[in-house]
Image 1 (tube, helix red, strand yellow):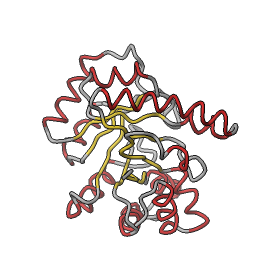
Image 2 (image 1 turned 90 degrees about the vertical axis):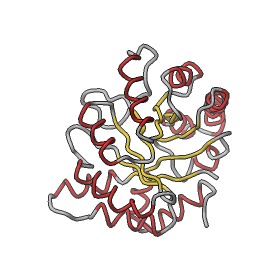
Image 3 (image 1 turned 180 degrees about the vertical axis):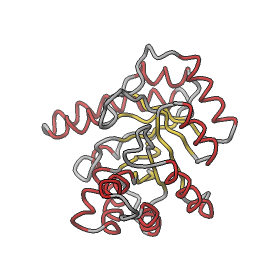
Image 4 (image 1 turned 45 degrees about the vertical axis):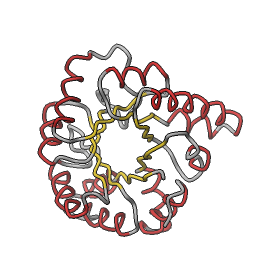
Length: 247
């Protein structure tokens, strides 16, 4: 069964736009978990424009009694403060994502010329602490091979190219999807688990959920946008159904 990990960054973005404590990130996590989602994702950026270190710690404390049922996934670039925070709260998974200066959201997976020594050390240290490590990669066999060579446990396939292709029509969507199938098969052949995320939504998930070996999808922006119109509980239920994980 494909696991849905709900990214709650956008709740923090709305809160931070006004200041104070509303809407509550913890209340959003509570609702998401109550509706049956088996995962929570956060991406604390260095500028703290949405999720903050305090949020990361508060969510970890909230989820602690649910360990084994609800997974906690922290995304981010391997900067020293983020790595230290991950070790402090010990999530189930850390997804290492490259960050470009000034970007609004992630734009690509790790490049093939990424310096390997330091990133390999981060991966090994997290695994030694019992944290599963996923690397955010483009949907190519070479990028998957990079993740395997770095010692990752999983890849997270960057799905914005698929989403844009799907918007152009069925033929374009299917052609893009075949690239993801090849990447997923390559990952599985190297012993890697397969996650995916970025711009997956209710329109394109009916196709994408057929990806072989897919363990988890991480969805935030589209789910929270949908929640504006139907409410967060209903949005979570709709996305659980879309990935084929509805109770």
